[in-house]
Amino acid sequence: MDDTIEGKESLPTLPVALAAATLLTACGGGGSEGGSDSGSTSPSVVESIANAQAARFLAQASMGATHEQMTRVQTVGYSKWLDEQMAMPATQSRWDWLMAKGFNAIDNKNNQAGIDAALWFKLLKSPDTLRQRVTLALSEIVVASLDGFTGAWRAFTGAAYMDILEANAFGNYRTLLQQITLSTAMGEYLTYRGNAKANPKTGSMPDENYARELLQLFTIGLLKLNTNGTPSEQETYTQADISGLARVFTGWDSDLAGGTNDTPDYRKRPMVQVGNKYEPGEKTFLGTTIASGVDAATALNQALDAIFAHPNVAPFVSKQLIQRLVTSNPAKDYVARVAAVFNNNGSGVKGDLKAVVKAILLDQEARNASNLSSTTFGKVREPVLRFTAWARAYNVTSPSDAWAIGNTSEPASRLGQSPLRSPSVFNFFRPGYVPPALGVVAPEFQIVNETSVVGYANYMQTAISKGIGDVKADYSTLLPLADNVPGLVDEINLVLAAGQLSADTVTLIRTAVTSMATGTDAARANRVYAALTLVMASPEFIVQK
Image (cartoon, rainbow, N blue to C red; front, side):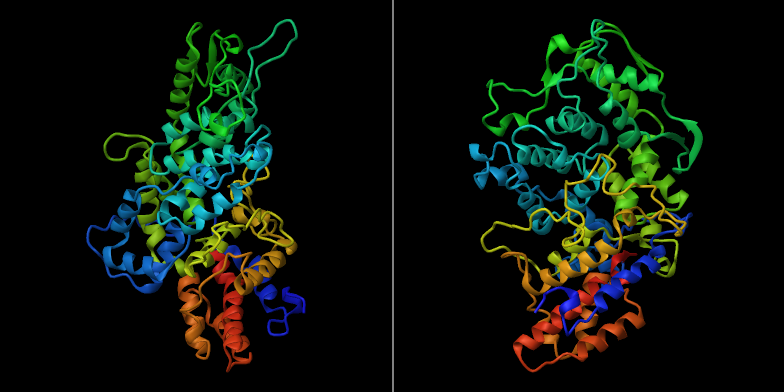
């Protein structure tokens, strides 16, 4: 029998219908003004946190809720849980995982072997779940993509880049800018690796790609912003600014210290200068002038300092981090509060991402339970996060340690999204995307269509019931509930959807699961698979509030 939704007698087309309903109901993903503006909160004592509140917090602050993490949140409180997560040591890097698995063999020099497994393993299993969530968010703001790496050792290029993002997830945004600028990944992706100064004889000019995207997408945006993130009509830069800044990014190239690229080691080293390609002349941009004769490293530092000092950086980056973690349309005051922390962490430091992440997740707008009934709060849960929510909740394992989930970008048969595989520097979806006829910003909707809705539901049904290769979940907590359908549905609703399924959706799922056979282990397992698939296809799960 066909394993797709359409071929399952026990699950006719109900998951597809529920998932498709998201297209009509996901306006709950935010409104033009966002949620409550009643201020921020920084709990200093352990507050009383219900199960659903803990699960909701983890939906925003982790790769997926588990009972263990819910209990820890309830025991120590939101703020302390964040502190504990931020203090956790980093686990094995993606680079080291690839090395340990032997993917540095010369046969892999010109392919991407191993990188998807390394990426998924960290997202699904690393105990520092908050760090992984922020790393994923940063990868969708300062975007580089595997499909844009053109040189040798592309898997290691991607691993090195994600490791930079992870290392700086709770660090300083200015340091992050420095490290991505000098990374071979970004140098290759935005085509300034090997960038040469102007040649009057041939008329060639420095490549402007990175200069443009650094300003437009990574730091200040197109329009000057108020501190609350609302735009003015004044543009932030001109073409002359781009041309002046591009002169800074000349002469940088891979550090082939050993004179060969037969090992991937150079992919982890910062780029170095090739002196005869660097433009030593004056460089003017954004009201800043770097004097003629300033060396390349100093010029790069001065340029990044000048950009980082721009007043747009705080609201521009803060709003996007809020969108990735909490809500698509944050209230203006929410953005302003977080941007204030970005500008000053309380000790006079700008760009402290640890302080910014705490401000986002502890803010009253994120924690206010009244937003659950608001049509102006929340976000569509992107496909990668839907998948990791299931995987974390039910402790997926890969006995072979291969984690052969692969590239899940195909929308017709997989998730329609895969980590570090954005189709362009503009991410999988634009932060300001407004779906036709919806009237509110809903970035993740840019990758939602009839094909991706059905493809996701079918893919998850297979993953839930059969696994992906040897990547399989543990349903030992659910199988004893299979004959108690209300208890089964309530348990899944709590962990995956923070108890937010509507009464109608709960009734619909209970009715469908109750109609299925029981009495054998196989029948009970089918009930669990059906309940999980239906919850994961429901609008209330797909729209994170």
